[in-house]
Length: 185
Image 1 (cartoon, one colour):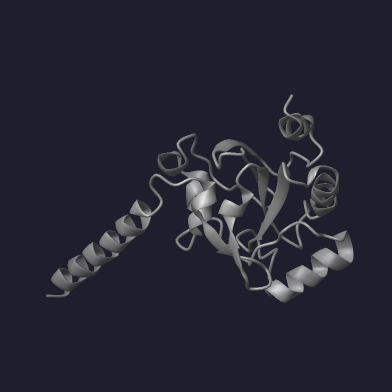
Image 2: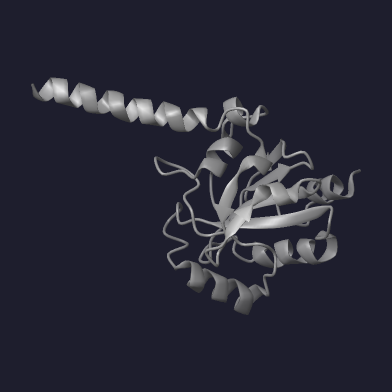
């Protein structure tokens, strides 16, 4: 009887999992609605026509100084054609332990961050946020599979909401590849 109950529970869980994955099929980046760091709804469809650099952030990481470069990119290029979006995550070595308010204050005080920051999410694992499932799975994004390997991994999204590339943490925001992509070279 225990075995039968376990099998039934697994079938229900699998069914829910595949239904959640069905919701990600035939979507692009602009089809998602997320929550910003202030708890407000942030509709990614408002970014149609813009190139978007998506980055998972953390306040206590060796790569945290990249906030400065991200802010510089946003100040130089952030307009109707480009934006940066930060998704704080605590998936790596507990390097983002704070609340949304803590993160917001840290970013403002230490790096003057004005680019859009979202509410803290999970970027990998069982509780991976749907946006990151889409970003990391070719069956959803139509382009490539990737694993979020550490904080400050960057995803490049084109004006049509399509994934263009993934750049790992060591790639700085002012890297020639990112600048060329933004400038359309």
